[in-house]
Image (cartoon, rainbow, N blue to C red; front, side, top):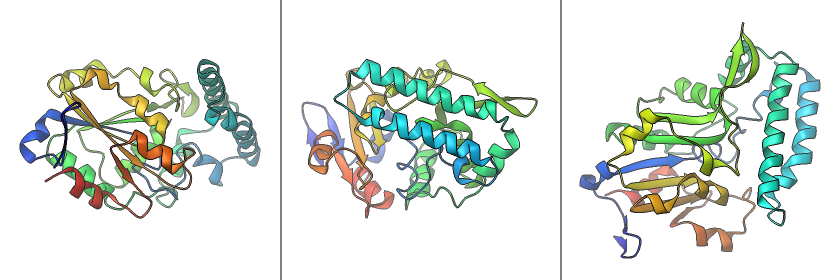
Length: 265
């Protein structure tokens, strides 16, 4: 067992301690594997949308993505510009009058996203042990929900906080909440119904693939937070820096079965 007297982190976690925990996780390339499409890129890879949509989407990516990852820029400015990017992308859904049917069909293609090995077992373990799982994703919630449903693991302990596209008369008209992106995950407000279920839970397991995912949880609000990072060659942060931020680092060859052996006993 690893015990940090200062932070009260205990690894592995015994079964009688599980009741005090909940899990907060990123989705794209954290629950899904590193080769998966992100939930933002699913439509552009599909033949269900006009090529002009895919082209405009790529132009937005090419302009804004370097800004998103450039830590030399002022953070507030970066965050505002990334919000602008997401808004413009959502406006493309409206401009091209993309239908809910297109979203469902694209999200139902199980080839575009795949679980990390053992992730389904991890989700089942959390469900069986009544551990709430909160997905805070800068992706598109419609696709996340569809993916979980198609894989028969959208359990009642799972809550998705993400960008949910809304439709009127079957056509996209916008997003139902404030935009969630990689730089403002600390601002995501959990619904009251979820907060009530977390009142007695003082320990958090956080999972992500980017350093920015650490913003999903404020450690000052909890007795302990176990930070788990999934490092890959796509990660912008160099490995030597990456390992400084996470208590457990999983490399590309690691899977959730390995992680569960480290986390639980």
